[in-house]
Length: 232
Image (cartoon, rainbow, N blue to C red; front, side, top):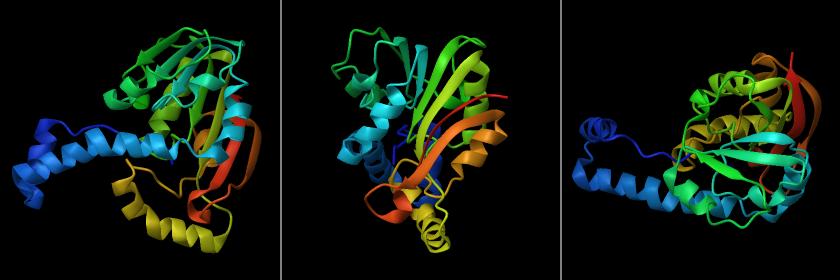
């Protein structure tokens, strides 16, 4: 669901154009899509009214110094309550960060970190809560990102998450596997078939609570994992 938006560096773009015969016009089209179109599509997708109850439940439970992974266009910011004392909004896309800066929110200090979740620019054990909402689907190295989240959490800290991912139904999983190669090309790297529970546990977390089920919408894209975890 959530998109990861980042423009290819010039060397990578040039290499892509040579390998695929795009030329300058093709590179310009790629840049226009990643810089202009994709951030707006991500913001539009995150406006889905069915996401609001998940936001209220997950974001409302954040406490203390909060690190939000993949803050996107800032759609979570209005949902933080008084228990959150500071928000560190990590987002690799400058376009989405610019959009997030204009989102009204409660009087909680917000610092935007334009960085990747695979290399969080924070010291060990300095965060009370990590929040990730519809983000693990699109991080290229999600295992490294989860390891980084665990590193920056205090021993008593918690990971709050709501993600879409691998469904329990065989027929739905077949569709997820079939759609993902094409889907991730047009949606900022979003995978429909990631096993969220096992990914979190493999990174050294113990899941305290998780609720799963389909949200209204196409089943391959709407199986949700909503829960919390702590370091083992």
